Amino acid sequence: MVGRELQQTTGGPVVFVIAHRLKNITPNKVYTEGYNWRFVASEDQIREFLTATKLIAEFGPAWSDETYDVYLLRRDPQPNR
Image 1 (cartoon, helix red, strand yellow):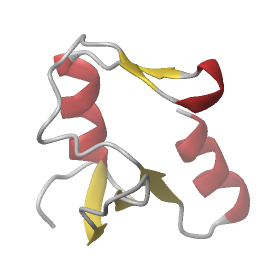
Image 2 (cartoon, rainbow, N blue to C red):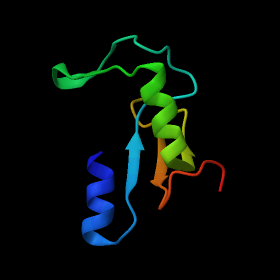
Image 3 (tube, one colour):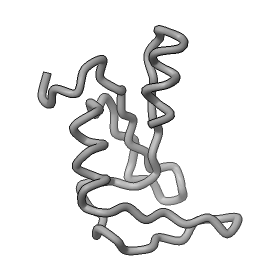
């Protein structure tokens, strides 16, 4: 995971800002984004990400594309700490 590499290299916190509410998405469904981007995640990928991170903020829902969840990468992979 690139986040782990950043954490180990810099020693600083790693924060992810995601425009999808992971708790509300359907695993393996393709969500289209602007600029021909797409977002898709398996159930295992979602579970692994949620285990490795801590939700620290939710912004929205907004009327436009400004709904975000913010996650902090944990120093260790222990959930709910």
